[in-house]
Length: 490
Ligand code: 3ON
Ligand code: FE
Image (cartoon, rainbow, N blue to C red; front, side, top):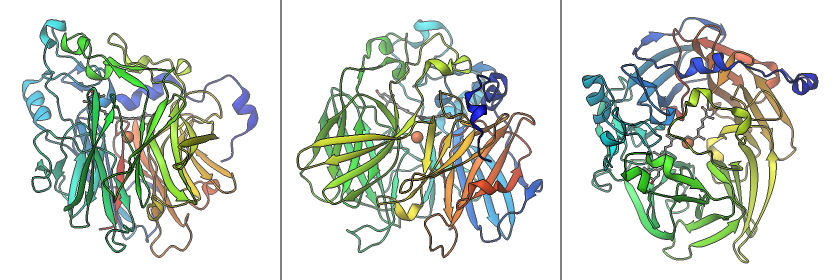
């Protein structure tokens, strides 16, 4: 439905904090059932599996974790065939998950502030990292992989979701080596005669940072790997690709390891945003060993990019930008966050000129938004349509309650909102088989419905958000707010 302007002007928020908080309750149970509580109809052409990953536990046996990004990874799998859908969820059996479930208490420090009970004395000089495998899940080379950016992937059985072990790509990764949670799928790689390939990176931060690029063929084999050292500390969560480049935003932050060492603060709490330092855009050629370029633009913080493409002598990058990175504070409760005090994510377009190393930028969407999705055939290519989770209201920072479709060529917007009691996660665009048009397909998203304390999977027609949902699949339980996932037709 289209939002009315009076609604946006009235001071009443579009949600209550209590409703929003309901999506941050742990889900301890593992389910396995056919979804039969459905409004509307599942399109029979929608065939394949939606995998999602995110923190399933917000506490360990009643001990609250400090931040959702520290929560143990849980996979949800919704498979579609012949107009029916099946749900299954399983926790990833990481070493940390198994040990903590057995002990019934927190045994590890988390990157985002979770500390072992017992104060700083219990945490001092503990640099051990808990690979929680909670950020993304991909199906590639016949393997289902749960990803977390600071360590190696976990391989899972795509049917049962049983954890099979850690994945090292035939010895390409070493123990504990990172493999980011944001790979990009190049639909047609010019190095591989047009075959698809997966491009990913790893970050090894320090006084200078090593960025390693991996390219995997459709069999899941690493076919290209190269490493580059860039000056300064990097906190890089995501990147974008074009046919010829990998593009990274080096956010202006500093890292002070002392409170980490002393057991007072976790790693993520030692990162400080530097508003007077520029953001650096690191341009790494995919297929030559030399030619890394670093461009500078104004300060800002980017977690996620939507897409990038090459046009004439420019590279265009679309990204969700924050004015600052709010610090994670040791004695705070994320459930009590003051939304109004935090800058919203907004969509910007950057134009890079590699010849004279200049950057131009313009804001495309000022409404608070996160979790962009596009047609997978257009990754790295000029594109028209972007789907993104957004706040119900046009202005201010607020939880994500709506889905926004942006036509980047005409500027037209379409919005579908689950407010006041629904809260939305990452949308995924799924092309219709044999689609001819870029937006011929569906947008799938999980919505937490506070009225029933359960989650729904909503299916929208990507061509027309204004006609409302095609189907709403009511799950038998809630799914804690998730991070990322993917749809596979294999
Ligand atoms: O010194 C380094 C600093 C650092 C922060 C060492 C390091 C590599 C261990 C490290 C680790 C970074 C990690 C593990 C980052 C993980 C991030 C994560 C799990 C999620 C990020 C999510 C981002 C966004 C924008 C989520 C938005 C969510 C909503 C709008 C609400 O649902
Ligand atoms: Fe992410």
